[in-house]
Length: 85
Image (tube, rainbow, N blue to C red; front, side, top):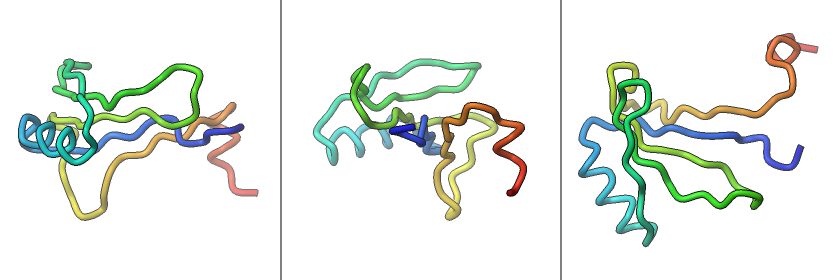
């Protein structure tokens, strides 16, 4: 496995403000979409190249907190991954 981080989501309360901030800081453009009823803005990603994709996310299940972003890992078998060796 070359890239164990599959995707990340950064919870936000003001999506437009967060988009302006990350576009300015990173010098890139985020793509806004609605996914499962949640407003999201996706960071650019190139297919076939290393690196995780991610998004800013606004919705009832997304609560900004000091604990940080939601990170998704890519595993072959989720049941096996949940069992400690």
